[in-house]
Image 1 (tube, rainbow, N blue to C red):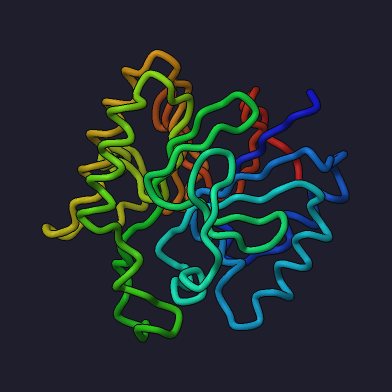
Image 2 (cartoon, rainbow, N blue to C red):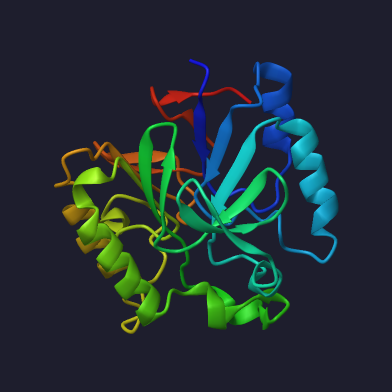
Length: 238
């Protein structure tokens, strides 16, 4: 298996998992690590030092969707380009931010990605300093674009990666995360999940945000600390 895709959940800037992977796994230049948002490696002004460490530890490429705990001011200054068929912000030579609603063809798998979520514990955060409320939640235009992408490519999509979880997930987890009445994204994703699961090639939906490593039902998986080998679903030790 020369072309491997790994996937993991919210890292919030943690480097330890990558130290563990380097020590315990035979990592390759061709490996790709996908992160379901809140990666946290582009957060502080000196983020380039963190990125340099990541590239020393992981020889392949790292691609993350945005969560709600991201420095959108910095991400917004980065060059936008196309990688594997979809729009990205290029963080470095081997690290990419996957933009909302984009489709990516990676090693024969088609991914539909949709980042973003609302921070509900914002009472102790100051806008522009660890919290970017104007950018963290997808806009109506971004949701409309995602809807179009999903419907037009439904039967070509193998996997969906979101940061926020479909609404139904909260019925099966102890960490509910309050959903205000004006917060529509969990319900939107609920509809998208049921639609995506009708796709001819659909294999699974991965989400972050809830800080759980839990299969909600076949085809719907929350990720946090675990690292999975996508092709087999095998948990990878770190």
